[in-house]
Structure formats: C-alpha cells, structure tokens
Amino acid sequence: MDPSTIVPFIKSTKNLFETMLQMPVEMGEPSIKPASAPSFDVSGIIGFAGDYEGSVVLSFPAATAVRVASVFTGADVATGSDDLTDAVGELVNMIAGGAKAQFSGRKISISCPSVVVGENHVVHGRKDFACVQIPCVCDCGEFAIELAIRPARAPAPAAAAPAVANA
Amino acid sequence: MKILLIDDSKTMRNIQKGILTQMGHSPIEEAVDGLDAMSKVGSFCPELILVDWNMPNMDGLTFVKQYRAKGHRTPIIMVTTEAEKSRVIEAIKAGVNNYVVKPFTPDILSQRIEETLARVAQAA
Image 1 (cartoon, chains in turn purple, yellow):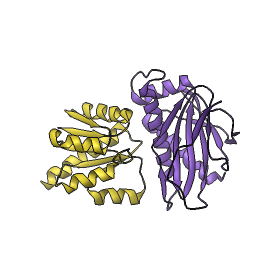
Image 2 (cartoon, chains in turn yellow, green):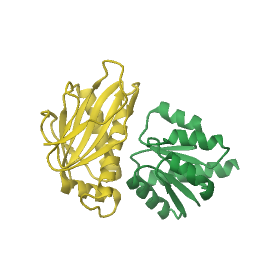
Image 3 (tube, helix red, strand yellow):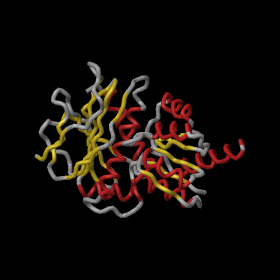
Image 4 (spheres, chains in turn brown, cyan):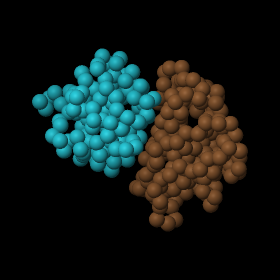
C-alpha cells in the first residue's frame, strides 16, 4: 500500500486521541495482515467509496476498548454495553472523516460505522485488497488500525462495510 | 436557551450536552437523525440547533434544507467529520450559520456557539 494512503489515517488517529482524549498515541511499524488473522475483541468498521475504496477498522482488546470509551465519554462504560459500541463507532467515524479530508481534491464518501464485538472475530475485506495493520499504543493499552484501502480502479459502488466472521 | 442536538451517536450527544450544560444552557432536546429532529422542532421550538452531517434515515444537510425551506431562521451549527472546504461551502449554502469539525475540544465548541449567537444577535 502506498504510504501516502496510510499517513492520513495515522495523523487522523493521533489528532483524535490528542484532541478528544488528551492522550498521545504511539504508532508501530505498519505490516501486511494475513486475510484470516483475527482482529482484537471490539472492532469499529467504516467503508470508503468514490476515488478511494475499501475499509478502515479500529480494533481494541475488550479491556482497552472499555478504558478508551470511558475516557472519551467521561463516564464509566460497561463491557458489552450499547455505550461501548456507540463510542467505538464514533471514534472510527472521526478517524475515517479526518483521514478523508486529507485526500485533497478526491471525492470520497464514507459509510455509517458498524461495530463488531466478540473474541477472535475476523474482518474480511475485499479479497483483492491488501490489508495493512498499524499497531498503536496509548495510556489505555494497545489497539490497531487495519486499512484495506486503495485508489478506485473502476466506477465505485456505494460505501459498504465488509463482512465479519468468527475465527 | 432551548437547544436541539441532532446526532446518531449517543456518545457524541452526551459530550455536546455536557459542554452545553457547563455553559449554562437548558433545556436540551435530542434527536437521533434528521427525521427525528423534524418531528421535534415543531413542539420544542429550539433557539439553537447543533446537527451532525452523516446520519441514517435523514442526513444533516437534508434536514437543514428542509428546515430552512419551512422558513425557520433558528441558528444552526453543523458539527461533523466532513472537513473538506467544498463540504463547508455546501453546508453554508444550505443555511448553516457555523461549522465545527470533529474531533473538537470543549473550548472550540463553546467558542463557535458564542460566536454564532453573537452574530445572530447583532443581525437582529
């Protein structure tokens, strides 16, 4: 994947955490994620369509998701609650929106977020897209951004979130 | 001041509600999308509206257009992840009075609200 496609998501994630959680994020080295490899326990997913297509996944271990959501909302958030999934959905929405704005001059639309909860779930993007995983760590714990995005090669379909299966 | 918050995310509504409450504003009514908001504006009669852009059922831009088409002049602030200049212009043309890009700090939101209300008061 072209680094110019990855950088907007890194910048957007750092900006989100610094602005709304007052928390810096350290990013590790991006690497290719095998198609069948599971994500963490709670994943927010957004589809991209238009001049760039694919999906972005923000995935947390359960305990990290609870801590991040609690800091984000300013209230205690329970494991498995609607408040947890809503918060994770809004976080991935802001990451996707912030990244989208950095693809200047490109027409891109993003879907409403979906959130998947469950151990060892696998997010299956399009088979012809490479998925790049960016490991992240903040004061609440580790998490990851998974990007399966590339410039559109043909007229793009409407933005849609990818399929999810349990591993 | 009566404020209507329109956002499909309960988390985002709660964050904004907390900031508005700290600013001393009440009552605050909530709507989960544009359609829900359209059903509430008649009885609630808001004096300020904060609206998200991307929502299911009816998005924020459609809400603003329909609301303005009915002749309502209540100030509207769009609070959204849509940060491109072309989108801001589109929203302003539709009748939005001010614009806040997510993510935002409490200071930014408070500042935009005060700025918007001051402009409206000056124009009146």
